[in-house]
Image (cartoon, rainbow over all chains, first blue to last red; front, side):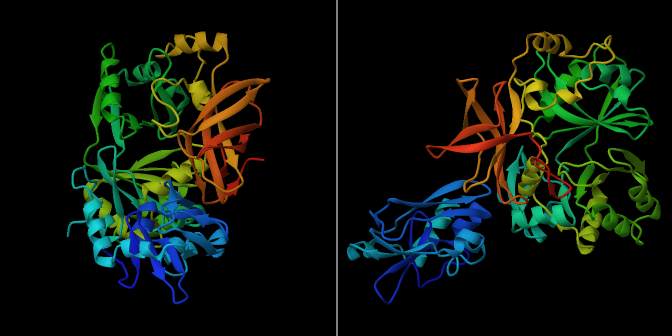
Length: 130
Length: 376
């Protein structure tokens, strides 16, 4: 399976999570997800300050092919969103793990971080789905 | 090397090349076809701005010959092949059932030896069965062209680049001259190829039918000349921008031509020509009130999609329609759609998107031609 960075965590819904030094987490969708979606044309993100429960709807990615929901991979408060995606949604395709990030949140329950998948587990999941 | 994703479908003669060009392969009507070669949107822009090429070898090419081929096609098709006043001329038509429903849409070329008919891939078996059934009273024969490939080269520079390729050593100057001289909506044979100035993108371009074993050489030479390989993904966004119907989505056996924006290609003259579906259509025409296929434009964020409900106010009454094809238009930068709506629909409607009603504009179902926006 191509391009699953080992320094990130993952969830089943094909989102990646990066643990930042300041205790926040950054969330985006994986390379596998962007490939499956095709060209992304709109991204709808949550508002900064919103509190999201685990697995709550956090936004929508619309590609040429389909609309897909984005979920909060852990519960917490949105502290930043990637405004660049408003003008350049294609960043999700070209650079899903860096410039194509979606939002950053402050976890409200750090216990949930233990339930995230590592790169190997996520690779296995993708294999299974293929 | 094996690039096949499913490994179950039919493959065109270009299949191995698609893999080498990095295609993502999907099943399309039983064929393993390229969806895109990386970015559907970049391929779309290539066709609007320069030139792209599509493998459309999955389409069905059928030659109709015999002393009554003309009479037969005048009976079979809603459009009149007598409009083909010289060899090489092409005609778009619906093939209707007795109720006036569209069995398929197709292109027919008049040839020195009879007619070449090109029908859709997913409808092949149904079409052939119907065509043969209707032929019992006519002296006609059918020859399906199974050992051919079809390559559509589309875009403002498509003809120029193709002529350049064909005039080089590996091909022939006669073919290059034909490409230069060809008029819109005409196709002529040259050394075993049928080269037609037709397409499904709203741009100038060619559809070339050639022996399957010559297809790879042409594809590779065109790619080298700067013609971008394009998949079925952008073929759909291009045709939808151009307001061209997709069979099975925008119309089917239960939809009459008037409700599919195909009324223009029902030839009522001459009045004594009896074609299949004529009686039914005359009755419907006398009654009026059929649904219309219109264009929808959403200028804010979001993408209109096939199957979404359209809510309309028709003279103060609640009305409903449905999106038959919807997409994000790469040329316009917003969503467009075709929708079937009740007669009397005005210039505003609402679409149910993800649980919310969103305002859209109703326009003629044609959005982009020759790279430019065409609706007001």
